[in-house]
Every structure is written in structure tokens, then in C-alpha cells.
Length: 211
Image 1 (spheres, rainbow, N blue to C red):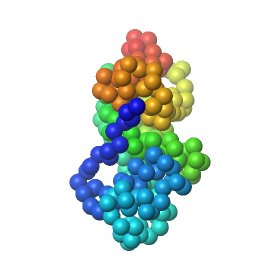
Image 2: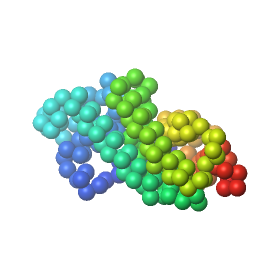
Image 3: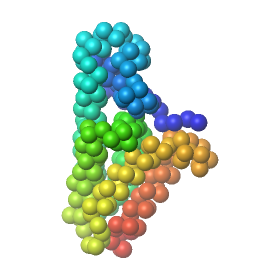
């Protein structure tokens, strides 16, 4: 069954051997876990020699740190996108569109984060903290300032739920796809997820007149 596209979005800063190796490591860590992905595996996926991987990163620990740095950078971009979309009470659909596009384009990074959290990795815990903080400050806070949230809504759990739902949707994508008429990663099913999720949040969090 098809999963989210395993390609990692290319940016100008990624057009280097260093970035190609890091992205190969990210894909391997997301698919098999850090412990089960060797430098030799990463080298083969990147089309380079194991020695070149060690030249750029030294050890797998440093390679893992580079992947974590990339993950936090991706999250920072998402935070900026959400902040631009959430400055008005009518921003709910825009927030859904931004989140869906981000999940679609960064499913590999999110799957890596979810897998690493299951493995109990401390760096993954920091990544989850960052994701919760993004939902708190770049999604909920602007809506709150615009008066779009119910006064009694639990802001802490709203931020946690948004982070958990996003990660779980990516991690359980194969199981979710079995419940749908076509894979979750297809445009039509991503759009259904977007609409249903926005509806869930609006009915649970929005003031009655804005829901």
C-alpha cells in the first residue's frame, strides 16, 4: 500500500553532498530507526562512499544531530507559515491548508520524529516540545487574540492534541489508508483529512458563532 511520498523537499541550501547524505539518513532513520540504519546504509542511499559520510559527519551521532537540526529548521518554517495564516478569526481554513501542505511535504521528517519518540530518544522529545510550542504560539495564540476561541477551551491540551494528531496521522498512515477508499497520501484523502480536522477543531475550540 502506498505511503506518503518518501522524497524530501529540496531547498537551495540542500543542493550539496552534505545535504544529500543528511536527507538519506533522515529517510533511513524514519523507515528503520536510528539503531537499524548504519553509515553504510546511508552511504548507499546517498550514492556516496561510507568514507565520504564520515568525512562530512564523523560519526553516526553527529549525523543524527544534523538530522535533528534539519527537523527543527523545518518546524521553524512551519511556525512562520502558521503565524502568517492565523492573524484573523476567519483563518481556520487557511490554518488547515497550511498544516496539510506541511504534513504532505514533510511526512518523512514527521515519521522520523514519531519513531524516535517511540524509541525514547531525548532529541525526539525536544522535537515534540517544539511542535507543541508551534501549535501553542503560532496557531492558538493568534486565534485567541482574535477572540476566535472559546474562553473555557483548554489551551494546553489543544496544543498537545494538535501535535499528537499530526504525528499519529503520519505514523499510522498505512493503517489509516486501509480505512479509506484510496491511500491517505492522495490529494483527495488529504483534502478530506484537512476538512475533517478543521471541523473537529472548530467545533471543539471555536466560539459558537464562529464554529
